[in-house]
Image (cartoon, rainbow, N blue to C red; front, side, top):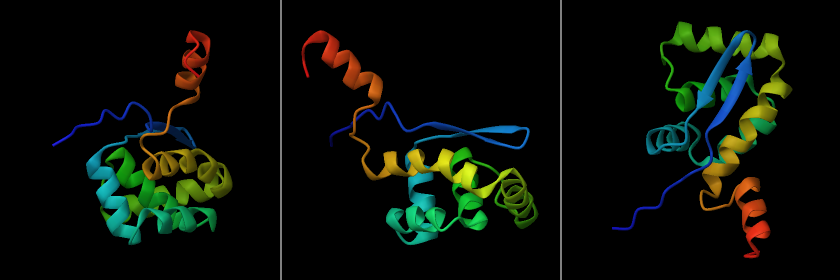
Length: 117
């Protein structure tokens, strides 16, 4: 079995006064994939500016409580903070899930400086 190190994908999202770290790990990937019946459906859901979709992704990515009252409070916080601004912060997290082998901007710049680009 081959193991690949994923060294990008973790994302910080600020919602109101709270800052959440969305962690790129198998548990989060599986939870989001199952909840939305596919990662591409998760991307579609957030681009439709759904506070519920964003709440689910932040909940799974940050490992937050899935109790309905906690999820509802997060969805309200997302609505108050601005759904489009939260979507903009969450989108890179989902895109990293769709392409985990993609290099970060920093990696590309380092390789270019080293003459490996």
